[in-house]
Image (cartoon, rainbow, N blue to C red; front, side, top):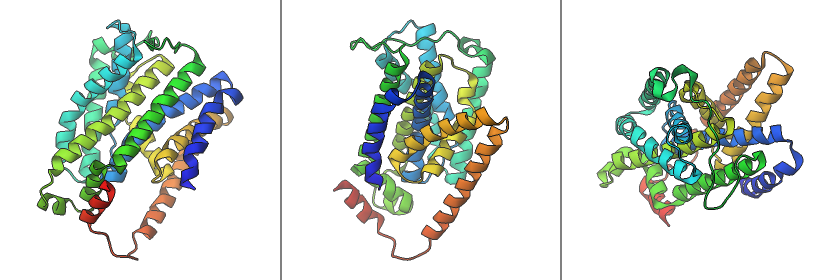
Length: 318
């Protein structure tokens, strides 16, 4: 079943502009940006069992770099801006990673949230970033040397789709690599991996930086989609939405993006029919979270011996 998701997603993505109007194409593109936030959270949660509530920090950093690049720095190449956003986000994420990687799940969640709120407070007060008004006048840059016109909504959708597909493929390859196998083994038994000579802290920091880079890419795409950047891009609702998407999607990588798109459409549909749409979506999220909790409790019942983490590393590497 899960293998059918990839070709189905590809076909649906390519064919979307032929059956949807411009507004709906914008919703799908918006869903792709949320999907990237969810993917970044998925990577840490599924491979290291570290739930982050602060990935808005990296989503917002990417968005602000995108906005400043065209409004202040006169940069007009989206590929250069993407690279710059990833670099700046890595610099921002490094101190967070060095601290958070030493903590357990609850401490990790709280520290990432605290750092995101610190950055949000900075954005609210720093006039260079537009303060509480945010960055206005954000325009879409060019895509040289390909000569792609990103101002066209359909073209921008396809661009966002390709970038998202590249991120999904990259995370899948990392998950299947020896590096991903080591991360899984660290999740299963961190002390055992330390005893075997693995530098657990370095692996955790590297995974955190990769996760932050994916969130930053989502921030860049979102900034050019809505053509506006605000301190809300650094707010806790961004992280909460990403975490909810991961919970709803379960453990499937591709399903994370599909769920993000569907929930974006669901929010628009609910908001067009009732002013209490937030309560409706909130009830849906709570129901899904409860079902996921029940499913997880049943899955944790001992039914088979737990595999040796060293063997899991060897299996992932082969």
